[in-house]
Amino acid sequence: MSTVRCLSLHTGEKIAKKQDVIGQIEQAEKKYFARHEAFDFHNELKKRNLELIVIVNEACVSGARPMLVAYMVFAYMKHGSTIMLHKICVQEKFRRQGIAKDVLATQVQRLKKRGIAKIHLWVDDSNVAARQLYAHMGFEEVSRCSDYYAMGRTGVQMALRLV
Ligand SMILES: CC(C)(COP(=O)(O)OP(=O)(O)OC[C@H]1O[C@@H](n2cnc3c(N)ncnc32)[C@H](O)[C@@H]1OP(=O)(O)O)[C@@H](O)C(=O)NCCC(=O)NCCS
Image (cartoon, rainbow, N blue to C red; front, side, top):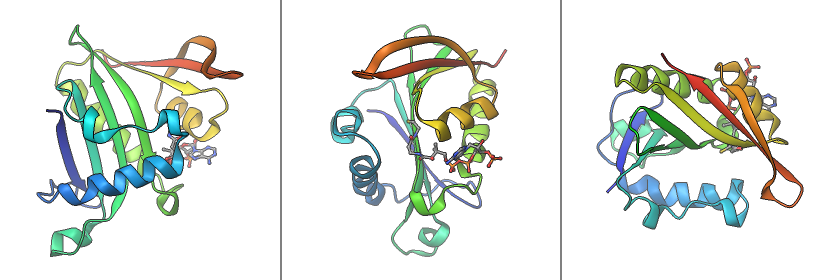
């Protein structure tokens, strides 16, 4: 089984109630990603090399239903010092508040402490928000691949060295 870390948006504390958010993530996948890019969480989470980071609104600390704010998925590679950032998504109403930047920065520090040497990812060349976010975090372009996502949609490979 994958590791699921459910964290509070404001305190960063771990939240015990994680089951409720998986359904919200599946809805977000349908809303924000093309069908062939949507993650099949029920099946994917059976894989041991995945790590799902979920950020929820603090309301759930007081017993209310956790509200999904953002999530990201990492995949550990065979040689353990490299990790792939498979996906990051912030719910529409929480965007442009620095949440992706904060969450990613926190995770980068955690991975660094765990001895991860490099994070790599693929991003759609036309996804300005994501590309700006990654550039802002220090990711650098490594290569490009035409028709990577679909006909006419170029994929950009980016990497961030941690050591
Ligand atoms: C990409 C995404 C995760 C950014 O989340 P966010 O919380 O809004 O990002 P932040 O507020 O932390 O912004 C960080 C930086 O990213 C860039 N950025 C974010 N949104 C942007 C936009 N719409 N246009 C241009 N740049 C943008 C900016 O450089 C920003 O820094 P600044 O505000 O200091 O200028 C969000 O737009 C999203 O979930 N998109 C849909 C899913 C997706 O495409 N994910 C990436 C591929 S898996």
